[in-house]
Image (cartoon, rainbow, N blue to C red; front, side, top):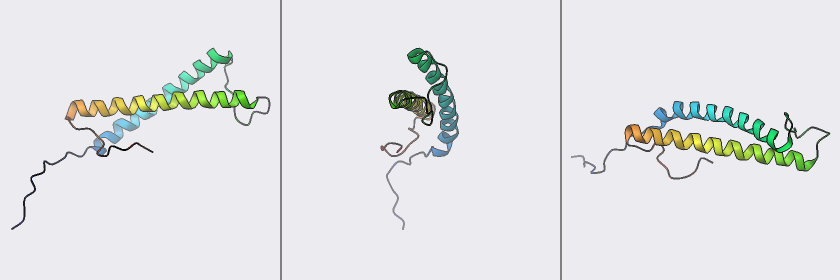
Length: 104
């Protein structure tokens, strides 16, 4: 006779969450790009941010642009991930990710 488990079954949602996470991630990346361009315009009054291979730009300017861009993209990605997870939890009652660890 097989022993029956008393543990409640956990609903698995990775498949349901993936399309929502992908869409939110794509949208957040696009919005972060717009936010970066506007932020760079406010900081340096220039439309184009420096590229790492731009010979005319100095280290400080290139690293500042990279830091601002990285921060904005990280915030946008976290906002999208959290918003999607909370939406799944509200609609199903289950958090979409089983483990408690981070993404990376």
